[in-house]
Image 1: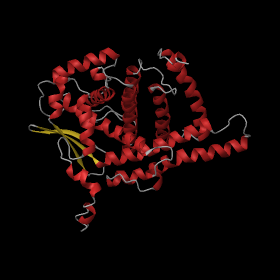
Image 2: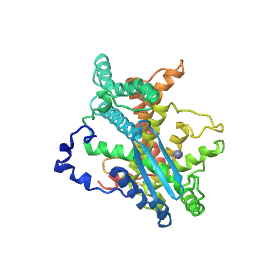
Image 3: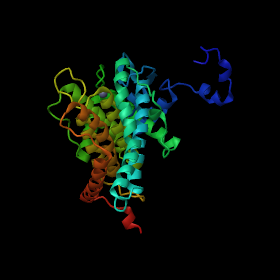
Image 4: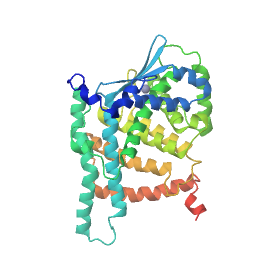
Length: 376
Ligand SMILES: [Zn+2]
């Protein structure tokens, strides 16, 4: 771009030297290359040779989409820049939602403030979380029509005050990582056009791990292509969390949970694929099916994870994510079901109170230890 604009002088800045020194190996993009390296490390030894022969290509198409395909010997994963734009926008929406919830919990006094003051505070707090979602909801029609996702509104690209740049960047990366892992899974499970000789051995190991955690096979009513999609999601989550090689850490579970749920939500919101039929020709299962699968899997693999020192647990993170998903899904429900009353900040607050109680009961039921109690 700088060359095209006759500003090669800008590129002589020494701070760019690192970029020019970079040599493409598994990808044309350093970010994707490091993500792919990380995923390969989380594969069983026997799977790595295949994965090492893949190339993750970033292209500049604006639509939120990715693909796995082969051309003869070459296996390719293609990630559109639209995925990254979507990851950045929905990470901002998530952080704004998270800030709203935190403010509701920490700063709003539901007991002492009088009703009128309380309503005013709630409306103001609610605006900060709801407005960005409404803006994205308004813009997605043009994203879809132009097949180009563009964070044109400042609220869609303005980093929330609570997010450090690193934390935000890691959330965006975890969304890209889930998409990359999903396409990698298609290659590893032999879903791409070539008959991959080791795919059946991979399937055996994959099944063993699924059985270990009690992960159910895809719903029988799905068509074959949709079942492949479910298997790719499942394998992607097992790789990201470290479960495929028995190296689960809570940090990896958080990444897998956040990356998958926000990626699936963004795609469903942009493409309006919340619900879909299982008729032949429908290549992807709907959001509800994929989301339920991801949540179920994360819960199952995080049973051994104790509650962290600050009270966090992946199951709690899932509850928080489900509130975020609900707010976005609620826009669709409001448009498509005349009898549906849209969520407002008051109903969200009630829901959060109930969710907190339900979460405590769920952690207890799963037998998850609270390390804060064990270590006073
Ligand atoms: Zn797929």
